[in-house]
Length: 307
Image (cartoon, rainbow, N blue to C red; front, side, top):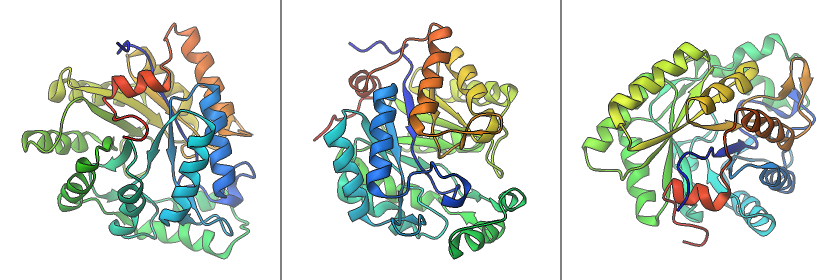
C-alpha cells in the first residue's frame, strides 16, 4: 500500500503563460520538453505536466502528433506519470485543447473548473524585446481574454475522458471552483479521490498568500472531507513559499517553468530539474517523505502506464 501521507511532486515543464523570449532555458521542441521532463523525474518529480509548443516558434500548440512525440520520449526515458493539459493556450478552442488527451488517453489530465479572466498583459512591463512576432500580440491580447471552461465544457470533458480511464487534476483558481467540483460530485459524474490543484497567484484568480491557502484548504475540507488530495502551486516569486506551506499542511506540490522562470530572486532557473531539486531539499528539511511515481499512481488511483 502507498503511504497517503507521502508528498507527490508535480513538475509543470512548460506552459502557455511564458514565451521563449522570457528565458533561454524554457523548453520548446518535443525533444527539449521531454528531456527536461525526464531530468525533473530523475530529480524527484513523480508527475510531469505537459504542454506542447510549435517547435519552430515556441507558440503554444495543440497538435496530437507533437504531444505523442513528447509522451513517447518521456515514457522511453522514465516512469513518471504524464499529465497532459486540457488548458492549452489562449489561441485554442475547447476541441483543440482536448484533442491530445482524447487521442493519447493519459493516466491523468488537467481540468480547469471554471471560466475566468486570464490576463498576462502586465508582463509587457518587464519584457520589451521579443524574438517572434506572435509573442507581443499574444500577451497584449490577453487583457481581453476569458479562459472558457463552462459547465458544458466540463461535462463534455468528463464524458469524453472518463470512459478512457483517464482521471483528472482539477485546477481550482478560486474558492468558487471548489464548489463547482462539489456540484459535479453531487451529480454523480466523478469518482473519489479527487486530485485538486490549488492554483494561486494568477491574475484573475486567488492570490498567493498563506492566508488564502488556508482559506482554500478549509473550504475543500468542508466540501470533500477525506475524499480528496490537494496540491498547491503559485505563480511567480511565491512558488517555493506556497509549496513549503502546502507540504507542511499535508498537501502535494507543483513546481516547474510553467509557473515560475526563477530559482531565486533575480536568478533564472536553468532547468525544471533545478526547481525540483530545490523542492526536494525543502521537503526533506520539513521531514516530508516524497512519493515515487508508482506510489503517486496508487495514492491518486490512476490506471497505470498502458492502462
